[in-house]
Length: 489
Image (cartoon, rainbow, N blue to C red; front, side, top):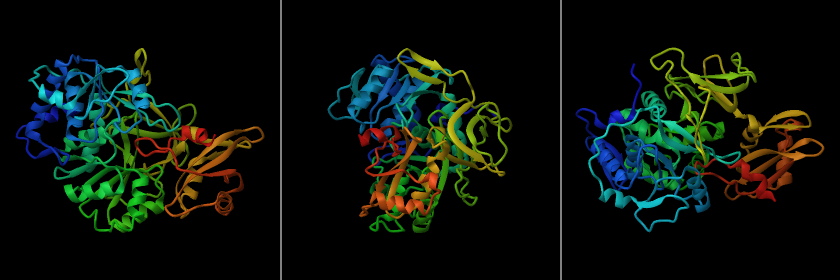
C-alpha cells in the first residue's frame, strides 16, 4: 500500500461535501485544493520560501487549517502560536524558530519579538495561483511545542509523511464520511492539527473548528453544528460537563463518540459522563513526538479499565526495561514506540525528525521513540499507561508512583483535580506533595485530606503535605507540573 500524503486529498476526483466549517465560513472539498494553492501563492508574495518558518497565531477557524495546508504545499514550516498565551511565551517561541512572517487575526496586529506580522486578511487579499509541486514529504513540515508539563517545552519538528501516516490510520480506525468532527482544543497545538483537520480530510468528513473549549462551548457547538464526534476532550471539560446541572443529558445527543486522552481520566468520571450523556468516551495515548496518538480504543469493544486502547496499525508499542529489552505481558517498564513489523503500513513509521534549536534542526538519530512514560501491555495488546518515569518519587528509598496516588485520591468528592510531585528532603531524599484543586463549592482542609488519604493509601504513599490551590495548566488543559513548586514559594 502506498504511503499516505494529506496533500493528495486536496484534489480528490469528483470531490463533494463540506471540508471545513467554523460557523462563519465554509470551504467545500471541491474548493479546497485551489484555495490552499492560492494561499501558498500569497505567502510567496510576502517573501516566504521553502524551509522558512511561518508562525500562525489564530483561533480555531477555517483560515488556520488553510494556512497549515498552504505551508505544507509551499514547503514552509508551520509553527502554531496560541493567541491566548502570554506574549512572553510567544516571544520565546518566535526567538527560537525565527519565523519569516507571523500571521495574525484581522484585528490590530500584535507585536512580535521576531518576524514580520501579517494579518490573515492581507494574505487573503493577495491570493494568486501557485503551480509548483509540493516538496518531498520527508522534509520538515511543522513544529509542535511539547506540552511542557515537567519543564521547558521542546520545539519538535515533524515531516508531512509522519503526520499523514498517523492521520490516515486514525481516520480509518474511527471516522466516517458523514461525520462532523468538532475540534475543541487550540489548533495552535500541532497534535490537534493531526487528530483534527488532517484526520478528517482523509475520511472525507467535515471538520468544525470550535473556538471555545469550555463545557458551555462544547454544548453550543454540538447543537449549532450537529457534531457527531468531539476530539480531545480533556478531563477538566469532562468534569464540568458531568457536574454542571444546567447541562442536561440530551444536549450531546448528536454525538456518536467523544475522544479523550486516557491519562488523567479516572474511571468514575468516565462512567459518569457515559451514564449522563449516553456517549462513549474513546480513550487514546499519544505524544507530541509521535506525532499524535499511537494507541486508540475501539468503540465496538468494551472499555478496559485503565486502558488506552491498542496500537494503531502503523506502530508497535512495547514496555521495555532500562536496556530497551521488551518485557512480557503485564510487566511494567518504559513504553517504546517503533514501526509495525507486519501489515499494510509495516516499516513506514518514523517519529519526529528532531528538535529545533537556535542553530536549526537537530536531527534525532534513533527511529525508535522512547516515550519516557511508564506502562504495561496486557495479553490482548491493550496499552496501560501508569505515569511518567520522571514522576516516580523515591521517598525513603521506596519508589512511589505519583500517578497511582492521583488516581486514588482523585476519586474523593471534594477534589476536582490534583497533581502529585516529589520535592527534595534532607531526611527522606524526596517528600510527597499533593497539589489539590477543590471541586466547585468545596473547601477541603489539608489535614483532613491527609487523614482520609491514610485510609486509602499505604503509609509510604500518603502525601507528606497537601496544598489546596488552583493548578497551573497549559493550552491543552494539562497540569504544568514544572511550575508547581515555584507556585508555593
